[in-house]
Figure 1: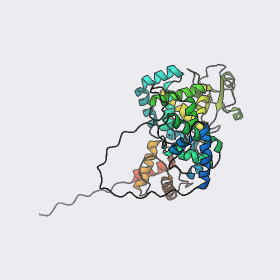
Figure 2: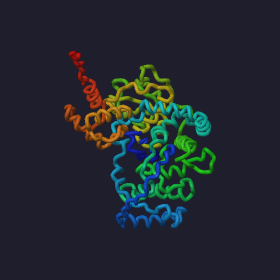
Figure 3: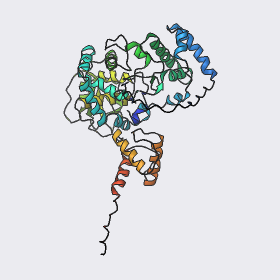
Length: 438
C-alpha cells in the first residue's frame, strides 16, 4: 500500500495487504424466502464533534471542486467509526516479526498463484513492461502482497474511515487530504460507488493505492475512459508499474540480492540510506550468499540487516528503494522483492531467520487451526486468519503443553507440538468377536 500504511491485518493472516479488487463471481440467487419484516436499523448515535468537523470538510471540499450537493450525496448515511483510531499504531509491517510477516506473504500458495497470474496476464504484463520498464514478476509480486491478487482488498468503507481519521487522532492533516482526494475521485467519475471499501487507512483496489496517489499516478490502460483500479486489472497493474517508474525504477537492474558478510563486518555501516559503491562492500569482504565473489561495479548500494547481524543480509540497489517507497517498511519491501525472485524461479532465502520459532505459511496456519478445532476450541472457520479466538486457544494449549511463554503465538513450536501429539494417538484396536457357538 502506497504511503506507508498497512493495507490490511492480512499480514499475519492473509493475506495476505497485503494485508487489500478482483471481482468475485456473482452469487447464486437464493430462493425467495417468505416476506419478513426486516429488523429496524438502529439510528446512529449523535456525534456533534464529528458533525461539526464534516461541516468544515464540506467547505474544504468545495474548494477542491466537490460542490456541497455532491458532498452531501456522497456522505449520506456516513457516521464516525472511532475503532479505526486503534489501528494507527498497529501496522503489521512494524509490529510483526519479519519471519512471521514473510512466512505468510511469500509462501508456496502465493508463489503458485503468482505464476498463474504471470501466465494468465502474459500479454498485458508485456505491454506494461514496454510502457513503463518494470518487469512482470515485480508487478505481480506487488499485486500478490497487496491484495492476494484481488481477493483481499479491505472491507472498511473508505469515506467512513477517512472522514473519522480526518477529525480525530494523529495525522489528521494527512487523512484530510486523502478524504478530500476520495471525494474528488467520486466527483470526477474515476470512482462510481461512494460505499467503496478498502483498508482502515484508505488504501483500496487491486494494488492498494491511497486516494491522493490514485489521483496523481493512476492510468487508464484498458482505454475505457476511466482510471479504475478496483475492477480493471489492466489499469491496476499499469498504474503500479507507473508508480514504480516514477519512484526511480531502473529497467533491467536488480533490486538486490542476499549476501554473506565477513565475521568482522561492522554492522554500524548497514542501513538502506548508507550508500556506497558496490566495490566498497566487496573490498570489505561481502560475497554472494553461496560464497562466490560479487560482480564488481560502482553501483550505489547498501547493506541491510532486517533481523540484525545473525539473520539474512542483503545488498540492495536503487530498485529496492522504488519498492520501499510503495510502503515505507523494510519487511514490506523484502516481501515484494523476495516474492518477485521466487516468481523468477529463485529458491528463497538461504540464511535462516534468528528465531527458534519460525513463522507459519497460510497452509500451516490452517493446519494449526484444524488441530485446535479437533481439541474442542471454538475458533470459528479454518481460514488461516489468526484472530483473537485462535490466539486464546493457542495460549491454553501452550499452558497445557508447558510451552513458555504462553503468548498465543502462531509459530512452528505450537504447530509441531500439536502435530506430534496427534500423530502419537493410536486408534484403538478392534478385537474381532469370537465365533458364535452353534
